[in-house]
Each structure stands twice: as structure tokens, then as C-alpha cells.
Image (cartoon, rainbow over the protein chains, first blue to last red):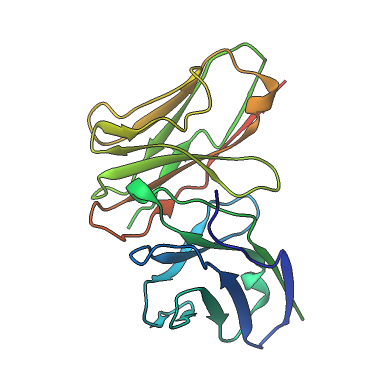
Length: 109
Length: 114
């Protein structure tokens, strides 16, 4: 079963920051949180992952709360091409990823 | 850097036929994973390999499903006696062995059962 919960959908205005929340209150202390996104008819695309510290790369920033019970993915300047389903995932045994329903982000002009 | 490659992209077949899908991982990745995704759902883990060894297969959906990775490079997923419920996207991913290395996915094979 998925250990993460996300809102089913969100809207964001083009050029604005998109902040996607995720609750993962039951993940273990050594389990990383991964974010992927999926655009229609393509495979999931890796975005970022983290354990305790905040992380940033060329695509996004990941903010993890100190108690590790939740995190937020930040797309600093959303574009129309960022419209996708975003998955927040904790990694299980054997690197098995358990996907939930994700958040459908709609970036609007 | 060539990504994960899957073939074919689309497969249409009649119920009862056998189908086989191929996955070529990123060349230096020794872990390879198979997932299934049905419409409107997130991907569902099926099985994975470390080199040629299949380390987890309890999540394969039935004994009609099998996977191989004979030389530790490409992998095949076979479904025997296909049923209409097998219609889905079958995704392959690969990663390095070291812990917490992200999996990189191919664009999948879409299977349609008539």
C-alpha cells in the first residue's frame, strides 16, 4: 500500500511557483521520498528525491519537514509543459516504488 | 545518454495469445524493474532483477506472467494466454545498484487485448 497521500488535483498559473504537498507520516526513518511526474502517454520522469535535508536541482526543489511527515515539491516558475501527474513515493524493500494516485497539476495561461 | 528503451510501443492481440515485450535498460544500470499501469492509476510494481537474478517476483499478477534477464542486460516480460484484463501499459525502469539511486523509466508498451 502507498505510504503517501496527495491531493488529487491542483491548478497553477503559468510563471508562478507550483507547490505540491505530500503527506508521508508512516515512512521509516531510512526511507527516501521520491518525486516523479508523468505526462500523458509517456513513462514516469524522475524529478528529485531526499531523506531529511532540503534538495534542489535544475527541475525543482524539495522541502522536507523536520519530522519527515510531509514534504513539498516546488516548481519555481511553472510552464504549460509542467502540466502532468506528479507522484510522491516512498521507496520500499528492493527499491520497489509504490505509486499512489498522484496529483494532477494543471498549469493555466 | 540513451534512456530505457521498450519494444514494441504498442501491441494489439487477440485474447488467448501469448505476448512478449522487451526492455533495454540504460547501459551501466544493473537493476531492472517491470511495472504495470492501468488507465487512471499509478504504476504497479511487478518484478525486478539485479543483473540476471530475479530478486522479487511475488508481485507478478499470475502464473501467466513471467520475466527473464538471461545475460543481465535486456529483459523480456511474457504474458501467456492473454485476457482482456491484461490490457494496460507495461513499463520498464532501470537503476544503479547503490541504495537510493533513482529509477529511470521507459515510455512503456501499451497492450490492447481484443
